[in-house]
Image (cartoon, rainbow, N blue to C red; front, top):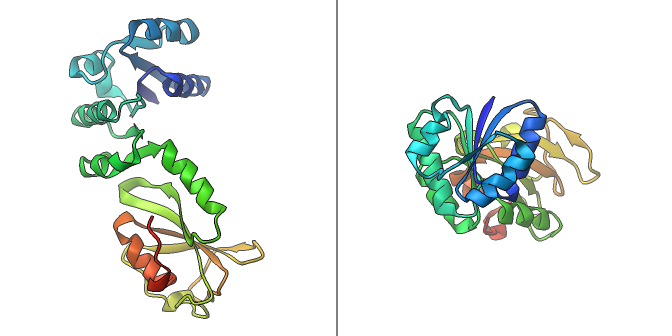
Length: 224
């Protein structure tokens, strides 16, 4: 796999190092010549000095044959531009680092589906330790799908009902049920849901509020 990495800072450097160790073809694009020279000392010739926001630089890097472009600079606007140019050049997959979580919606609207936010990732870990949070984001999947964990309270409208009798939003699926004792099971239509169960559900981001209302109840709504 050929991976282009825009940004030779710590994130880009260690990402490139791991990918090279896994025998992938990698090229790091770094704007700052001094930083690029430092990366060259560690990674050899797998570095191009240039501005990844410029189409000519990406073309020189061979973006047309790249399998993936990861834009991981410290500037959200730059990461957005890099991914947009890569998409226009036919790159099948782009990944963008987001430093300000408020920019995530903008990236989605511009067609950049896969984003990574360190702030959101840390927050999700914290929320897993807070019993008041009944919906925890776990993972963003392709095509606008998300994997979330939902813990059913005593007042959950679905408590005591079989999975087949639960009306979920379109394109939503209960993929795993973990009972209060921590025992996981893959549900069938006959699986009965109980208060205290943790459900791992695949759904669309725009359906999160409907999913929460269906499984937890409107009185337990919490912002995501």
